[in-house]
Image 1 (cartoon, rainbow, N blue to C red):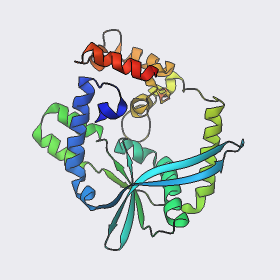
Image 2 (image 1 turned 30 degrees about the horizontal axis):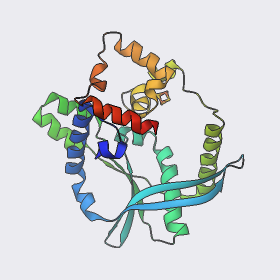
Image 3 (image 1 turned 135 degrees about the vertical axis):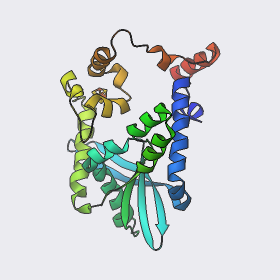
Length: 247
Ligand code: SF4
């Protein structure tokens, strides 16, 4: 499905990684998934203006669970749980805007907001690589994939304004990646530097000068990048992909 939706081939490495993630995620989240009453609920806040006068809309997709007269809104993220816990205020801003649309503009009851992380923690990843059954079970039990984030609608105007400021900066190309030193710095709680916790999720990393410099230093010349690009596909498939993308 990923290949069909994305219109491009996936490497064997990524297919194996994706399958493993789906299996773990399903084992962990089946109980919540069974209770979802409304899925892919689209929320939108149209006709907003940035400080420089650009028009924009905020859109989001959430899942809703109704249970025992309680209504919970879930926002699904592909980020790791540690990353969400370390930067909770950033995620809270987005959830608050969704809660504002759902509760205040649409007039629905809402009792709780939470984030579901589809990605599993790096400690579980390490356990899976070790193939040690006891360690895998322990890490799996400790994995908390649902992070409850209380919503506070008082700051919604400020949050929408912040979205607008970011849009102005993107449109005027007023941005640059941080310097290499920043990528090497420890980031948030626990172990891990900025490059591992943030850049690893970033689609721009292979064309980002700072990340390329980091990767060159970290992996050296001996690192075999080919496994990320190798794919057991035929040439026609690649030709189709290139032609499709040209269109
Ligand atoms: S890889 Fe992405 S997140 Fe990391 S420094 Fe570059 S642009 Fe920023």
